[in-house]
Length: 375
Image (cartoon, rainbow, N blue to C red; front, side, top):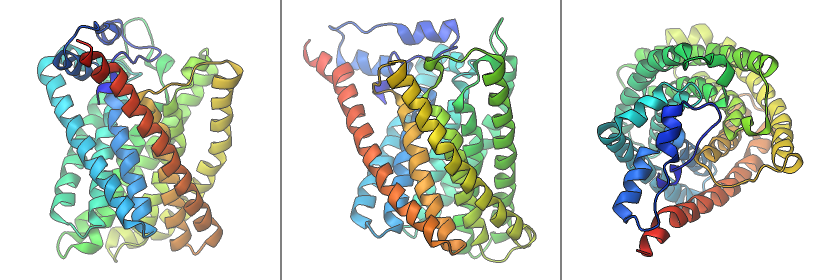
């Protein structure tokens, strides 16, 4: 989305920072502004689709069908617009794209494409669709495999003179989220198809297992980063909320796998996954107060201004996913309190989405449309 122009993050490469920091003259035309927006597009902007899609799923499962449909349309349009902007960036601004891939503080944001693709596919399965979600699963799984090997390798290489660990941040958890999103979509498709159920079950359990390992590995790396390197209020970026969102989507994936039709891989792991889902829900719930406290420390105590940025969607998605995950877990394990928590939290997520979406529209108007109208 055009709102990404000029946004930077601690630890970016000098090349990428220079590309994104070029100001847009007031007399620039709308075409020039859109071109600059594509050039400076934040890799993690697909979190907008992730957040909108998961809240649409939450509304659909609580029988708010019309509102859910509106969010589905918004998620679909945002997905298509972001794909177009990404293609434009890849064709016209390859240097900016390469700079993001080589920056460990931003490169893991590319995994939001995988998660957005699979979350959108999961939402479409609730409409009774099979072909499009299956196509999205193929795209998402392929991107997950390709990015799963290339992005971490670039992060290990790091930037010249600075260890990658020193600029690791919450976006690294999106690696785990992407893996779990593949598991969710595969598990939702498995009961609805007549052929290929065993393959879908294998994919769901495999990607869920990989996602759990990645979550633990990234959590350990970030714990070391917090202990070994200085940590400032500016370093406490919204993507740290993905630490909670990753546990929530792990719960959703686990609940969907437990609900799947009988398959050898599912039968062998059903009990383990059901127990792990409860563990991850409890840990994710425990993470919420520290994350809120960290936000207060940053914006209230240290007075860092709170303004719209693309990474705010990395807060909305975990909120929505936590609500859906709690409701699914409550249904599968017959936990009415957990189900009630999920229902209430889903409405909180919708309110947060509304405020953030309005702020994004205002940001786009001020930085792209309004200035162009002055020409």
